[in-house]
Length: 274
Length: 328
Image (cartoon, rainbow over all chains, first blue to last red; front, top):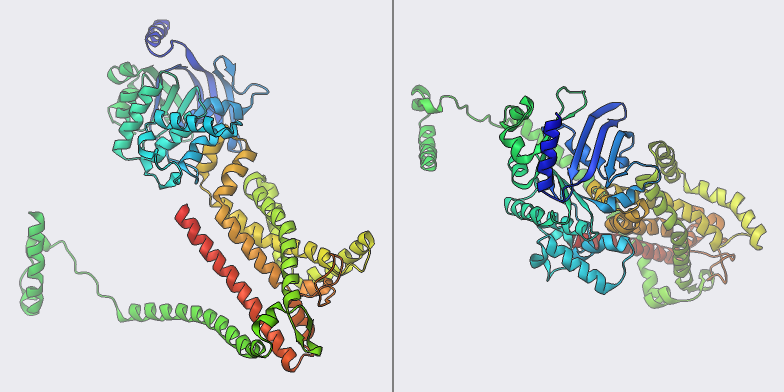
């Protein structure tokens, strides 16, 4: 076990910054009395892409939403255990979830631009946080759209409604909107499952470009995608209905897909269930 | 290739039908054996469908006919006043003194608009605030308490509002500000409460129809609840809220019973909010029992004006909704 850990640490050193952005220790998650996740202990490497895979209902999205406390918005949810962001407990007393979410941005399965102009969508975050100067906002909007690979397509139609764009463009608009608040971490909850293949390619390219500066966690149903984009992969599984889901295996992506250590991981990635 | 085969199959079908005896006798080709002919629609089904369709058509027709008949009736009864007094003197005349032959309804129009505007200024924010509370803030328990209360407001007969205003509100206002308590201030307070359910219910619907993903997006960007409501949800529900407010305006300007009981009913533009006044609706209630001749015709003329105001509101809602669809 300690050997494995040692080799894992060594591997980690070669991607990203070599340290963990998030440290999750013995996390349990509850919807009212239902224990949805149990005993999750995992480290999420800074400036790398970590993928969460597993069958539907295995709690991977739930876990993702623990990382920016989005589950707080659902009444009756509860967390036990620890999640540390840069060593700081995110559920600690006095921690403002609003500030946490500024640092840990999120992209959803369904593109969800606001029903306002492309410009206003991207300027939303900076304005929230008090920026008013037109010249500064212009700069941030352009920069964010460029980073999201959308600038070329929309630079002449910034005043048009965000909802007039295609699904894939909308998703990149949402990415630009998040990037405008300069998050440290980007959580992506199946960001490509509702968009066309060309856009999927663009989003995947984008992730590779972004990870120099941002820690990315992606939940995906698509194992090819996990294999393509991620440096680390975590496999979640709920073995029995009504029982909590576990983290079955967490490895360097190449290792997990080529030589899974757990039989259940192997069964899943070779398509025997799920 | 497969398409070609299908086409030939279709071509062959009419020939087979042309000679039913041979078609029945000859065994079907094996590749068709699993297929079953589509059932023919029965006469009963057809008649039932047709009857239902016409029944619903009739329902719709009754509604339209009702509006048309009222419009025609009021129009025929009221139209002559425009010829008699002249449409500009009728609408623009500053004196309403029908027993002396003065048929200027300008004061009544202005009073109605004053009553409506004040009610809107007081009741609109109250109603939108209530809707935001119900849709975004309230716990399920609080919602279960407040929503029926708001709906109940809509169910209270307007005469009860008027009675409440007359015996409770009017003396309080008279004590606080002097006078008799009949006037715009009292009417505003009553009407403000009366339009709350209309505006609140429709605004809540508009807020509820904003996709959940938009709330999540806003919260996930580090917006507070207040910022999410103010910067995203209210703008997103804007069209629905404007519609709600216009319907509230219609309710306020059309309200009669509650207003007549607390307005004091003097046919002048009031000098201040504590003086009695008469509106387009209340003049009809007050005068109709005894009016005759031109006076009576003039009251129908007032009804035509109310009808036109309603049509303007309905048209405004349609235009705004269409505009909203194009932008959204």
